[in-house]
Amino acid sequence: MSFALNNASARSVIEDDVATERDRIARDLHDLAIQELFAAGMQLESAAKSAERFQEFRENGPVAESLRQSMASLENSIAQIRHIVQSLRNESDELTLTQLIRHECAMAIAGLGFAPSLQFHSSMDDLDATNPELTADVVAVVRECLANAARHAHASAVAVTVTVLREGVDRVVQVNVSDNGRGIDPSVTRRSGLANMRSRARRHAGWVDVYPLEPGTMVSWRATEFAS
Image 1 (cartoon, rainbow, N blue to C red):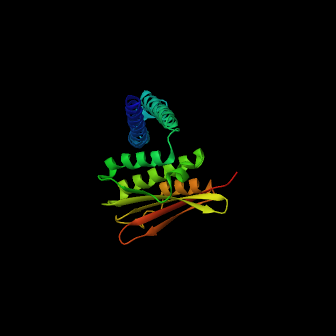
Image 2 (cartoon, helix red, strand yellow; image 1 turned 90 degrees about the vertical axis):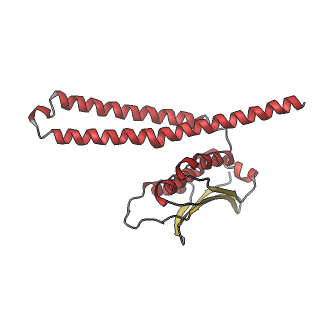
Image 3 (cartoon, rainbow, N blue to C red; image 1 turned 45 degrees about the vertical axis):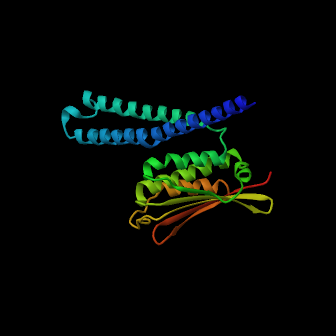
């Protein structure tokens, strides 16, 4: 019996390690490789426009054609990488919400330079009962908040809390991510990450708010899982 339990425990550790590594690879491909390819594509596009000033480099010339083919190859590579990322993430669908959030916090250490604080203000059973569609959005929001904190906040501490609330027969999942960084730059008017979070919240009759702290910022995201 002891041998069987040890084997089961070892298997569980290996499965967790594999899932964590798969998630890391997916994030690296999405956050690093795709961004680099986008940047290379923009440089090629800029070069093509600059080259149009010269007769030998104009639209019908061999250089212009080579640039077009290179840009098409980059777009194809980006599409293939996105497909791989989606495949890697689909293989993690069997993981629970709490496991996936723990993995996101572990993956964020490299970008933040420290481990974010994570608290579940509800029972694991309540959190892990969240349906797959909402689970995917909750995990994506946590990932986006941690990525934003790593890129822009220059914080020394980040805290993630996830709670399940009851509103009648419906369940509400609330995610709060706070940091002690420099806050939101008022000169930045376009924030695609926040727009993505709002879109995810609207899918579940929810909302997202951003609160200034002293110092730092808190993002509060909320979504409803309606009783069937």
